Image 1 (cartoon, rainbow, N blue to C red):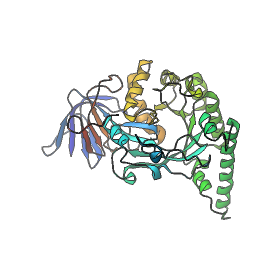
Image 2 (cartoon, rainbow, N blue to C red; image 1 turned 120 degrees about the vertical axis):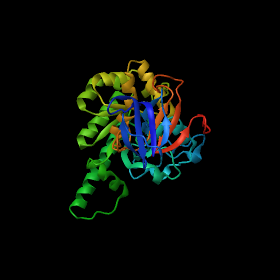
Image 3 (cartoon, rainbow, N blue to C red; image 1 turned 45 degrees about the vertical axis):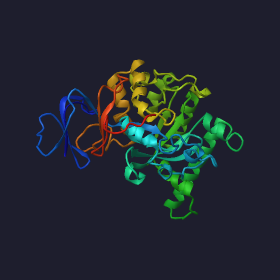
Image 4 (tube, helix red, strand yellow; image 1 turned 90 degrees about the horizontal axis):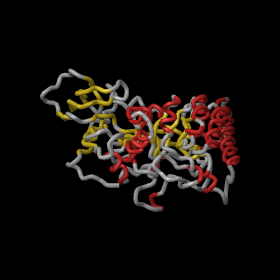
Length: 387
């Protein structure tokens, strides 16, 4: 059993516990609080003067699918043979030995939600996984966690010579696929046994509201199209990127959608990013919209997620809310908060001990990183992977 003692515990669920104690057993948090009995046979980690948080959760990434420092051979997140590929599964492309995973957990990122890119109108399923391990099957938190759909510029650019060339066509082929899935599902329910269709099979959990849709949408028009389709088909949907979301905060609040924002540490590298702003998280918080933050790895490296949260703080977001956006909020929005995102009894023992507040101090470092109750990194003792 491991005991973390004397740390300032940022629980993300029940405030801050100063000089608190966490007991870890069998990969889980056994106890958390003050005045907890410490036994002689426990492995003691003294976190006096240090900040202790749950492991950071990246709510939207492509880590492990587009490998670091590799070209075509490692480029697996966009299957550009067909704009409709709901049957693709990210788990089949994850390479756990990608150095980006080492960079991630050494930077305090212990969980990621990773999946296909945005080349396709319907791209396949995301999964949630830990960042430490050798076999993806053993690293899974939840699979699948969401179905990817994409609106706007990327699909137009990829398929301009062979597929949908307009936003109208993108929305139309998504609708067509959903209508076909409904018809297919209804035939199965009536016992008519339609010919097996793997794409339509993959969409059944979507049209039944059992699987969240991650909707890639940057511009206001694409955000509203995603919302329109979600309402037409009664889909459970989160808005991903939502770059121009600060321009329509009242409308998003009224519609009731949750969002994962970012990546904010980029230039306006394409037209639909021209209104990118660091104020979006603050605006969403002030409007009462539930949001998380992403790296969109490898758009920005995974360890920079706390820095991205810090940029939101610099633009007026409360620091505790910024930390929530990269822990419990991301976990709740992606449906994995039963296991990660906060320091609570019974949850996975994914814990980071920091030298300083990661969203306030650029020179902070992760001193110790624990995943599933195992110490996977100690600053100064393990060789650090740069990025």
